[in-house]
Length: 273
Picture 1 (cartoon, rainbow, N blue to C red):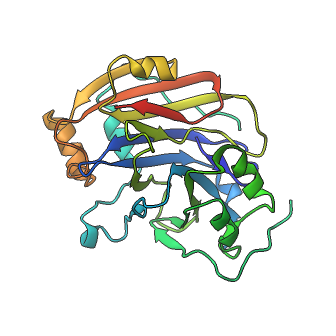
Picture 2 (cartoon, one colour):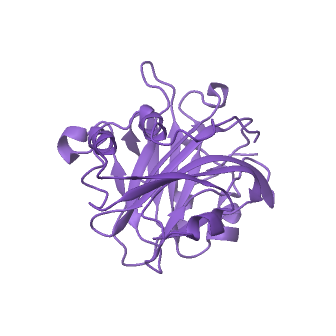
Picture 3 (cartoon, rainbow, N blue to C red):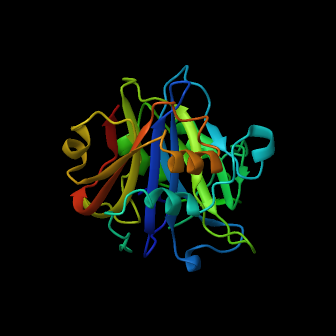
C-alpha cells in the first residue's frame, strides 16, 4: 500500500510491479485508487512511498508519461496491470479495503515534477521532507516524526498527489532507484498508514515480482504465488514493449504474481532475487 498524510476512507485496487533493471537498479510501478472526494483544488492529500537510499546512490528516475518521446518510456495508463493480470487466470479479483494542522515549511522548497495526473517531489532524506511545498501538498506538522519511526536512516521518499483533471484517470506512477543496500533484495512499499497506525492490516494486493528466488516468495509473503510468466513469452513481450518496459527489465526476466489478501503484519516487503 503506501503512507497517506491525512486519513482516507477507502484505498483500493493496489497493484505493484517490482523488478531489477538491466543496469542493476530497481524499477517500481505503483497504482492504487483513492475516492475523488479526498482530492480537491491545489492542495491535496499526499501519498508517500519510501525507497532505499544512501549517500552515493544515483538520483531517482521518474517514469514521466508526458515525456515518453524524449525518454523512450511509454505512457503507463491503468491497463498496464489489467494487461499483466491476463497472464494469471487463477488470480483473485482485487477488492476494496478500509482504510491537524498544516505544516510550516522552509521557503527553499523541493522541486515539483508533473507526471501525468500526479505532482511529485523527491526527498532524499527525512530532513528534506521539511522542504515539501505546502502550496502543492497538504502535510501534517508531525509527518517527519511519523516517518522517522520506520525510515529514520537509509531511505528517501517519493511524495505524490493526484489532481483530478479532465481526461486523466488514475494511472500508475513509475520510478527507478538503486537497489536495497544489500544489493540482493527488491524493496516493495507495502506499509499502511492512512491516519491510524496498526500492527496488522488488511491487505488486498497484487504484487508482480521479476526474477524472485524460487521458494522465497511464499516464505516472505505468506501468500500464494499465482503463477510465473517469462519475458520471452510472445504475448508478455508485447505487453512490456507497449508500456516501454521491455528495455528496462533484464532479457531473462520471469514475472511472478503474488497476491496478499487478508490480515498481515503491517510492514514493507523485501524479495530476494
